[in-house]
Figure (cartoon, rainbow, N blue to C red):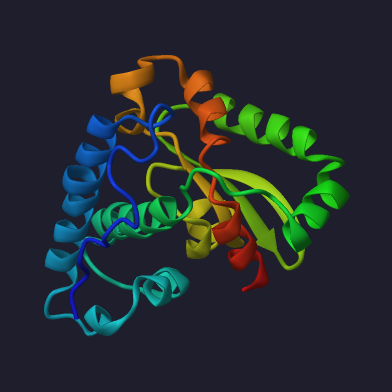
Length: 203
């Protein structure tokens, strides 16, 4: 089995004016595709090539390959972006169990947003900001480069099941926002797919 670029459920311009069409197209067809190509090349002729990307992440600490660091960067890039695309949509509303848990564990949605923005803004260099479920506890964490919480703490520095993820690499926002990372982070709230996030909480 080889991985393939997932189709988006929306057009490249569907997230305007928050995420611009040109960035979305380049981000999806160039950056994400490159991660997939590199991952497939590394896993070809190994017994790991039959695993789903989620399964690969869950056993990453047990993998022994000469080019494991390259695989970490590229397979991580594939799963991170696959989650990212699904997590974007205009017009959804936070409600139900996820709203209740955010209110209970963070105090309010606004407090949650503030803490998430602070984590994302203070993350140095490339990486991701996440809301993760750690055995029933919602936590805001960040990972470097293309690390994913599913890789486990010994590799990614954290753990948990991703509920929401925000790409902090400059290629995700520089054409529109240049060095204004906070503007990009704040724009994210307009296009969070709360329905997808709620479904991921239930998992």
